[in-house]
Length: 148
Image 1 (cartoon, rainbow, N blue to C red):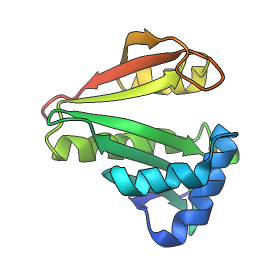
Image 2 (image 1 turned 90 degrees about the vertical axis):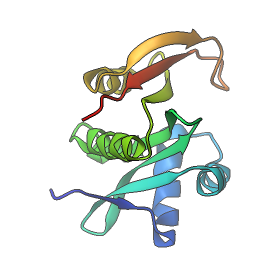
Image 3 (image 1 turned 120 degrees about the vertical axis):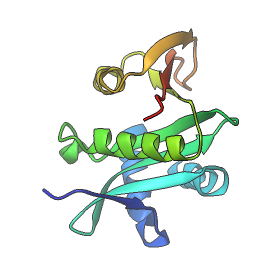
Image 4 (image 1 turned 135 degrees about the vertical axis):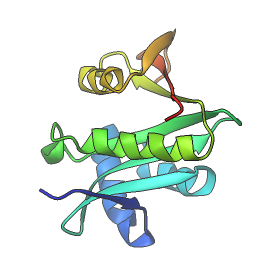
């Protein structure tokens, strides 16, 4: 399974919408995509044989901080390193833009995501009560990017 992490293209729009809806239903994926394309710095996709199987969106928070706005992988492709590959490329690009840290929010119940983020060095620095529309709390996590 050859995974290529590449820049988003308009031809990926419908597949990214499908992935977003599958991962985050009942959010409004078309509105989310509008926001991603308008305000975010990078939208990368994971591509296997011309099929988009995941995406990651980043933005600059300020001069030294970048943020993982959203990341998702199709259910049938999870637990195969695709999310990790997307995150590593996103972090690499944030570092190249001069960021010293990367932040994100994650559901406190999302054990697979927490496991991945911790594996890559993210630390829980705060809990945000009622962050999600269903009332679930979020962990605010931060990764210090080392100069390498």
